[in-house]
Length: 230
Length: 247
Image 1 (cartoon, rainbow over the protein chains, first blue to last red):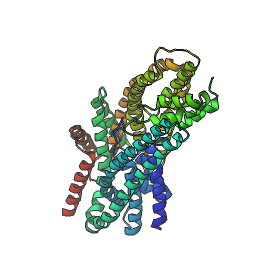
Image 2 (image 1 turned 90 degrees about the vertical axis):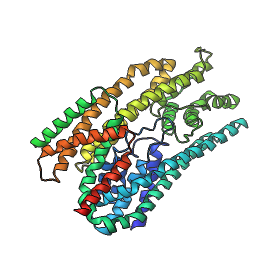
Image 3 (image 1 turned 180 degrees about the vertical axis):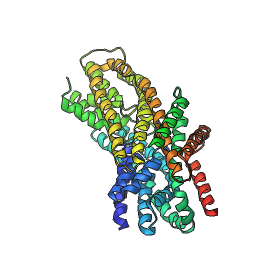
Image 4 (image 1 turned 135 degrees about the vertical axis):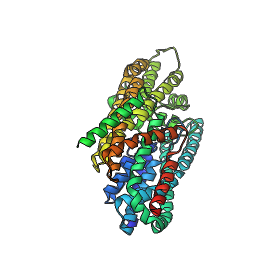
C-alpha cells in the first residue's frame, strides 16, 4: 500500500518543486495547497489540510527575492503528509497527533532543501556556459532544449529534498512514537495552535506598515468579541 | 512586421517557464531568450538571429509575473529598430533600467502582499477544516497573477518604452502598502480565532484568548531579533511534551 502512495507523493513533490521556481509559479507549491493535494490523492485529505494549515505561515515571510532561497516548505508539506498518513495507518493515532509528530520530525530535515535548490541553480550555470559555447560556434537550435533542461535540475533537487524528509522521518518517527506517544497525544492540540501563532509572529515581524499595532489589536479584539457572541 | 496574436500567445505561454534555467550568473537570461524565441524567429534569420540571441544573453532578473511587461516592450523595441527607428538608447540599456523596478514592485506586491493576504484568507477556511481554503487561495492568488502577465505583454508590446508610464499608473507599491494593512487586520482576526480555539482546551472563558496577543507580540519581537521560527517551534514543542510527560 505504501509503495504506490510513495509514487504519488514523488509525483506531487516534483510538480510542486517545479511550480516553486522553474515552471508556472501558480503557487500549487504552497503548503496550504500541496499538503491537501497530497492528502487527497492518498485518500486522507483531512491530514493534508491540517499539515498545510500548520505550515503555511511559518516561512511565508521569507521572500524568494533575487538570489535568496527560502526554506523548502513545499517538500516538507508533501513529505510530512506522506509520513503522517503512513503513521496514521500504522499506529491508529488521531490525524492531528500524526500531523503534529510528522511536522516536528520532518521540518528540520527540510532544511536540506535549501542546499539542493542551490545545487540545482549551480548546475544551471553549466547550461548557460553550454549556450554561450553553442552561440560561439554559430549553433542556436538547441537553446530551447538547454533552457528546459534546467527543469530537470529543479526536479532532481525536489526529489532529493523529499528523500531526505521522508527518509529521515521514517527513521525517527517510530522512536518518537515509541517513547513520546503519551505526552504527544496530550500536547498535539496545543502544538497544532502553536504553529500558526509562530507564523503570525514571523509574518508580523517582517511587515513595515503604518499603524500596524493598532490595526492588529483592533481586529484581534473585534474578532474575539464576535467569537464570544456566537 | 507586427507580430500575429498566435506568436504573442506563444511568448506568453513560454513566459511561464522563464525561470526554468535560473542560475547565479545571469539568472533568467536563457529564460528570456526562450520566451522571445517565437517572435525572434519571425523577425530574424541566420546571422541576424544569432546576433539577436547574443544581444540578449546577458544578466536579466526581474519578477517573473511582471517579466512579460519587459518582454513585450523589448519586442516592440526590436520591431522599431528593424524599421530604423532610433529610440535614443540601446535595448540592453532599456532592459537594465526596467528590470530592477519591476523586480522591486513585483516582490513587494505579489510576494509581500497578495500571497500572504490570500494565504490568511485561505487559512481562515482551512482551520475550520474546509477544503475551500486551498481552492480560494489558488483562485484569489492567480487572478491578479494572470491579469498582470497578460496585461504586461499587451501593454509592453503595444506601448514599447511608454510601458514605463503604464507601470507607474498601476501604483503597485502603493497598493502593496494598502494590502499589507489588510494583511495585518486579517492576521488579527486569525489570531483571535486561534485564541478562541485555545480556550476550548482549558476550563476558562473566551477572555483567556486575549493571552494570544501578547504571546504573538513576544514572538514577533523574537523574530525581529533573528529568532528562527523552526527553532521556536521545536523548543516550545519540546517544553510542551516535557510538561505533559511530567504531569
